[in-house]
Image 1 (cartoon, rainbow, N blue to C red):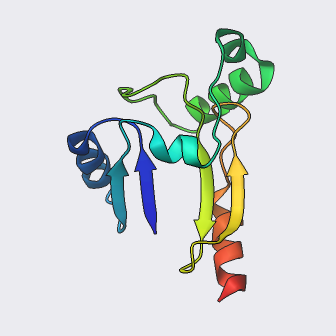
Image 2: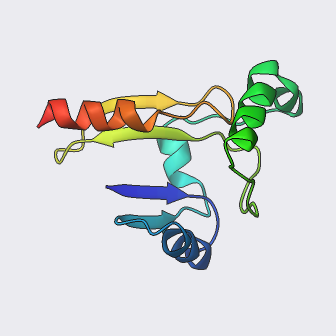
Length: 114
């Protein structure tokens, strides 16, 4: 498993350490991976969408706090599972910033694909 995020190599290392992640975390400052996987960018009007605001409120209530951002704040995320042959087996490109793949969904997909 590999996580790829915006920002610097130093930020990626700190994110990995702070969150005690057992996998590789890479930085993609030029956003080449985001472009290669066709991930879009949010416009200014997108930050006022009700779904995003509600998602942020739920996350805050659950204890999540926004950390220091790095990189392009308009870059939308995505989650992909790519097999060893380089074929995409699972794709969830985000339509809004909070449109993330659920951990339970990913773990279930991985368990069933073994």
